[in-house]
Length: 184
Length: 279
Figure 1 (cartoon, each protein chain N blue to C red):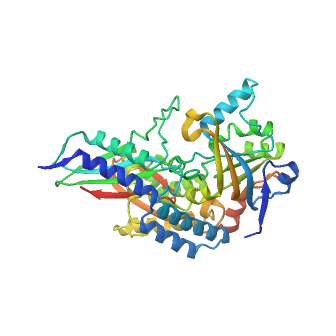
Figure 2 (cartoon, rainbow over the protein chains, first blue to last red):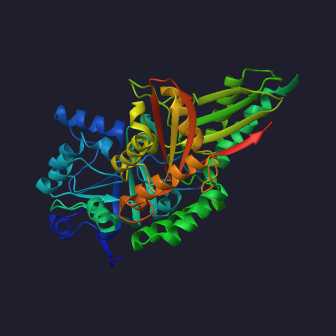
Figure 3 (tube, chains in turn yellow, green):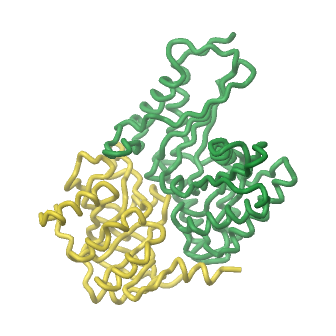
């Protein structure tokens, strides 16, 4: 495997453009969580020209719905959820400044095209390794939509959050590249 | 007639819900170790290592291995000579799920389909009941994640499609599923019956020990052939490229109508959770 590239949020266009599909990254800084229901609400706000509950410029949205924290723990298990369900919403968020998404699984072509247009990166974390991923989360605060339970928007402080670049700003896709390499 | 207290059903479902989410069965761990050895991609090998590490953390700290602690599939073989005292089977199972998901700090993922409002306690469970002979109750608790369940399909093939048609459908389903269902996966296949029977057979096939041989030599050969064809696609662990996308293919078969060839596919993520008890 290639060397791990350290990146810190918020992401600049320069950092985003330097990343290539297949790169292993270690993320430090703030991640905002949102999944199905929260995305719907964020888009409703944009439709009504209202302000989002957080400044999305340069930020990464992590597609996750964690388990409840045990007493004394910061968070429960917190691995990525499948990303394609957020495909109908993702280009709108890129348009207003979102620079990265973390999830797992393939994106539709229109989302990959939007990543090129708006300079945004799609990262994958290891799906199903929720107990392991949780170790890189140092602080968690619910900042919106508490009524959504696991789907509430959380502000997470992470250190050495491991992920791989799936789609870069040049239209590449590690899923296709990886598959072609090992196809028989 | 043997009497079983409903409280013992509640207790069993509660404990198995937690156990299933905290600790993978030995057959799954063994399959990870074998997969790591056989995987040709360095990234794929690293993913197997991470999954083994994840399992150790979950078991040692008694936390869920995956944040998607699933909807609760509860498969019951109810002996016809059993009388359940104190409450209904359905209520007892749902109470067990309620208590297990609250006390075990498991995620509650069930919601109303239109409003998407969460039911708050992970109920109702998906209960599959079979009445069998005898005076015992066998309960299998198999939490299933939404991401892999979304990749399930049922199709009604033409009898002329035959075995090759079935294989093609299953292999293509895996290709379309790609990285979505959290590979390495176990592919459950139900053949025959009716549309709903094929889906149930596919799910039940996932309860079989991973890597165990199908007792029907014809199905065993089909399983091996499909496993090779799926892995030859090159998708690998997490779909990032490699040789070990699927750990196993399991088939269950049942007779069907002369006009039909129903096929169900249920893809299970690597967090292949199922724990059982006999009361």
